[in-house]
Length: 247
Image (cartoon, rainbow, N blue to C red):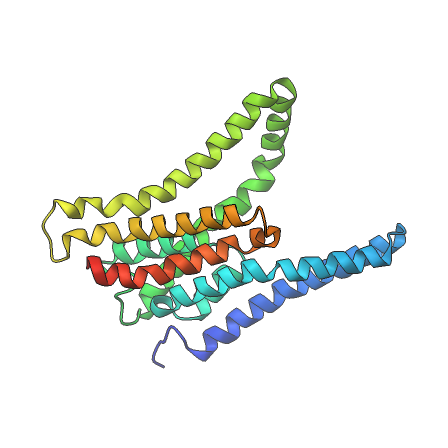
């Protein structure tokens, strides 16, 4: 049987896993509703909370769908569908997949279709690496949270500074990936010297759109839940003319 990144068997396997996760969500939802009724919570407030939560899931869902489409060209639909439906994000999955294919002498986005061995390798890199967070939480999560709480009780200002520094450090790791092709400006190769500026320009466009959304949020508060997918779509859309210009 010939391997295909979009083989029906892969859709069935991924569908079963996604259905299992959805089943867990429904189970916890039913348990939560029963508990809420048992402690006498107002049914009207419960219904309002569920409606609000349902509406606000649309925004991140849009970002997820876009991410799946972006990765589907090289990895097929089943793998991005699974990764981004359970544990994953576009920034992580793209970097993990790119690192895996580059180690095999390939380039993400320029692959006709992965063979079975390459597909398994990419899947393992994308899956096992991100599971580290799941394994670490029960091991160090309680101690880490206790340490942060203790620090906040002693010096709240320093605790906030530390948390902000950790967040900026995480963002900086992804920014480094964006700027890593700058060397193309002065190093020869079988590519356009300015092609290394493409991800930087896309980043700038997305950032400007996010800033614009932040300004508009003062008048339209609901925009805050849609700022991320809007900036994401704007950045992806800008990649088309920017690539045509700089390639």
